[in-house]
Every structure is written in structure tokens, then in C-alpha cells.
Image (cartoon, rainbow, N blue to C red; front, side, top):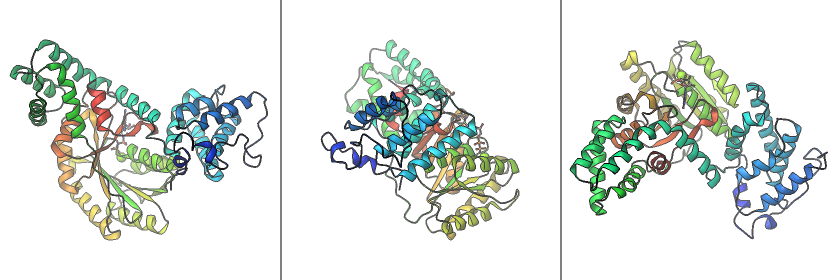
Length: 441
Ligand SMILES: Nc1nc2c(ncn2[C@@H]2O[C@H](COP(=O)(O)OP(=O)(O)O)[C@@H](O)[C@H]2O)c(=O)[nH]1
Ligand SMILES: [Mg+2]
């Protein structure tokens, strides 16, 4: 299904890696028909290095990329040749490899990028998705770094205070817990969630017979991990998978849809975006641009059209044209709260009628910078449409990330992705363990 899903099978472990793979990484020379001839003598170095690196048992994307980009500082033929060589060595289908390169070239053109420093990170992101390597250790480290940088302000807010607390107390007594509760409240965890979290932590401390504040961080980390333990996901049984994206104005719904579409495209899925926010013409135009840029289809009707009709017809198109994924954008104007919720309910009903099981997921987008407001929004949307998962945007540049703990505790809803910036690559899968580690280390 994905671009190069076969690849994982090529690297089973030491010994059975390259040698057992016919026409795979063991090959040192690309066939001329598939790759343009390499002209300079020096380029043989990278071919040899790359071939050697590829023969190592573990996939190491950052290592491969470093080899590919050695002595390359701009986009151009040298880079395309090397990428082709990589794909070929990985035994990727030629047409898919070519498509990857074409898409990437177009993206560079769209954004006017030329220097490796401008696009290296996006290239690595695309390769990780295309090669299904996002779970690889290197990539996980990169993600953790990104999350922990993005959460710097939130961490500063919480961790500094916790360090002060730990230094000031010899045992975890009542006064210790009271002070900790205050820290939670000023860190945007909020009253109700703070009380819940405290009760859980105290129980955990009792069970572990822990009284020394030195043990506190471990307890807290474990508790946070538990709160965000991701439930098993049920895959959509009847494609297209329909995802309805809801949330108030300005939280990042449309941008997040573009980012989700980008991810799915890089994973080789055919994606349709439906412009269900028909309230403003600008909203439709914004989606048009994104769809074009990420290579997704778009279904839109004129400004002022009935959003439920957009949903209905978009599902039709998705089914008849064989799309794998339909992402439905919706309006989020809250000044007509009741109408909005009724409208969303109607859209949901229509989707289900048209395509049994749809929407397979209702995703609520919330903006981390809004702090405690995120809680009332979650409640409101959850009551109206039944939220399946949350995407928290703008975690970068806010000290209010603590609200995430409250959302997790109070609604028990999984957080699937976090937004760590405005770029396409800045939407990353959320891991409770990483979140806990980034918050208290
Ligand atoms: N820093 C940052 N900005 C974001 C993120 N997600 C969205 N934005 C910005 O938030 C603004 C509103 O986004 P938009 O998608 O139009 O929100 P919508 O009204 O919910 O559709 C835009 O300027 C986005 O670039 C994020 O994760 N980090
Ligand atoms: Mg929007």
C-alpha cells in the first residue's frame, strides 16, 4: 500500500540482510536504464559508501541521508541521481521512486527552495513516511527532540517549579502535595484535573511505598504515560476512510488537514479533501491551495453551500473515484454555537447514511495556546459529535501545554498528533511516553 512498504522486509537482521536480497542493496551498480550515468569519478565514493551503509543490518535513515547529501548543497541532478540510487538499492519500484522525486521537485519549486539547509528536514520527513521508517530509532529520536524543543516553554513552566519543590522537601508529605497542586494549577492543568492527578499520584506513591521526593519524577512520568496510553485503533473496514475534522475557528483545522493529507500522500494513499467550511470563500481557496500543494484531490462547492451536501457529494466522489482517505474540513464559528453543533450532527448523520461506518473518525483540533478553553471546547464538541481523537496544535511557542494533561485526564480521549509548527512536517504522531519524558526529565 505505501510507497515502499516492502523495504522493512529487506532488513530482517544481521546475516539475512543484503546478501539474501536479490537485486536489492547488495547491488553496487544501478542499471543504466533506470538511473542516469554518474559522471564524475568522485561520485563513486558515495555509491560505495551508500552501498556499504545500506548493507548494515539496521535501517538508518539519517545515515543514508548524510551519505546522499555529502558534498551536495543544492537541489539538482546530483541529488536526484543519488536519491534514485537509494531507491533502487532499496529495490523500490522505479515509477514510485520517480514519483517521489517529481513531487519533491514540485514542492521545492512551489516554495522556491534550493539549498539543502532549507529542505533537508522535509526530505528526511518524506523519506521516513515513504519508506515506512517513522518508527525507526533515529526517527524516534528526531521526533523526541522536536517535541521536546516544541515543549520548551511548557517544560520551563512546570519542570523548574517541580525542581524547586523537590529541593524544598525532605518527604512527600501533605505540604509537599499541596505545593504540587498549586504548580499544576498555574501550569494550566486546571483545578479538576489537578485534583484527579494528585489522587492518582498519591495512590501510586503509596503502592510503591515511595516517600522520598527523589522518586517523585519517576512516579509522575509513569502516571503521564498511563494517561496517554494510546488505545488500539480499529482500521476502517470499508474504504474510503472518512475523517471529519472539527474545532473552533483558528485552532488549525485547515492547516492540520493539509498536514494529514501530506502524510497520507507520502504513505502512498490517494487523498480527497472536502471543503466543508463553506462559510467563507477564503476558506475554500485556502484548501484549494493546500490540496494542490500536497497532491490531494479537492471537493468544493460555492461559498454558502450546505455543508452537509458537500459531505454527501464528497463521499460519492471518494467512492466512485477510488480514494483511500477523505478528510472533511468543517466550519468552526462559535458565535452560532447551537447552529454549528446541529450542523455538525447533521453532517455526521449524512456521512453515515451515504457510507456505512463513516465518519470512521471524528477528530477534534484544539489549540494549546488557549489553555483551559480547550476543556470546554472538548466537552462541547464531544457532546455534539462524539470525538474519537484529539489533535493538539501550536504546542510550539506556548507555556500552556499542561492543558493536555487535563484533556487526557478528564475525557480519556487519545491524542493522535501534535502540531509543533506551521510547516507540513510539523505534525507528528503523539507518544505519551515522549510527552512525559519531555515534560519531566
Ligand atoms: N505555530 C503553529 N501554528 C499553527 C499550527 N497549526 C496551525 N497553525 C497556524 O494557525 C493559524 C490558523 O490555522 P487554520 O488552519 O486556518 O485554522 P482553522 O480556522 O481551524 O481552519 C494559521 O496561521 C496556521 O499556520 C501549529 O501547530 N503551530
Ligand atoms: Mg479553516
